[in-house]
Image (cartoon, rainbow, N blue to C red; front, side):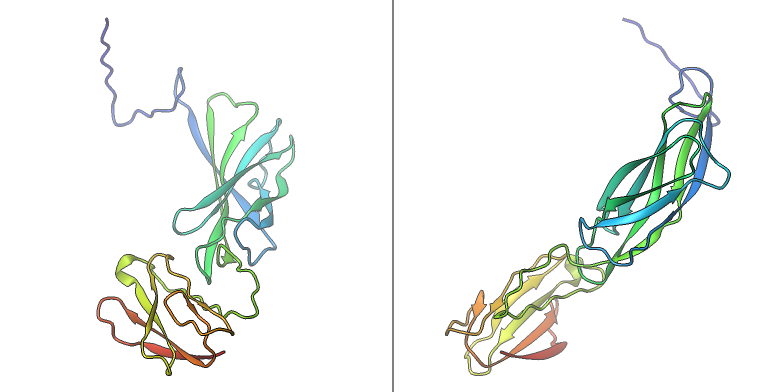
Length: 226
């Protein structure tokens, strides 16, 4: 058994190269897209371009990323042919967790099919913001009322509860507790006599109210006519 002790200084760089030190070169490209709005997994077209005047004599692969604020992302890898400066293709959108959110589209890495000795390339670009919405589009049901909530900083400390109330009913219905995009579905349909935590079918006027979870102070009310 042998033991080797290696010392280094603060000026040394770990570069995964067995011999010598590599030069780190960061390329800043440009990415564009005609897409303004995109839902989860929707294909969006883009054009990714290398910096002005930069070409390679062999094929290179660039990494394209769609990234949303909570860290969710999709990645795709696209080839730029020898002597060319750009690639146009499509990538699946990462989408968003709620309505009225955005995700970013950008170039995030590059890989050379033929390595240039002594040089290690990094890749970045401008970031294009794309509007997005819910991760799921509900099936159309003409007999149902669908209400969605979106609010800033969806954390446990900023959650709230909802109630569905029908004036003719003796009790409020605690319909849902929302925190970080987690909630309970309460269906409202046009026929029947049910009125409970899961479904309301009695015809008439309903009131939807919501309050902060900490102090239960009523913020707003809305009436829904079925």
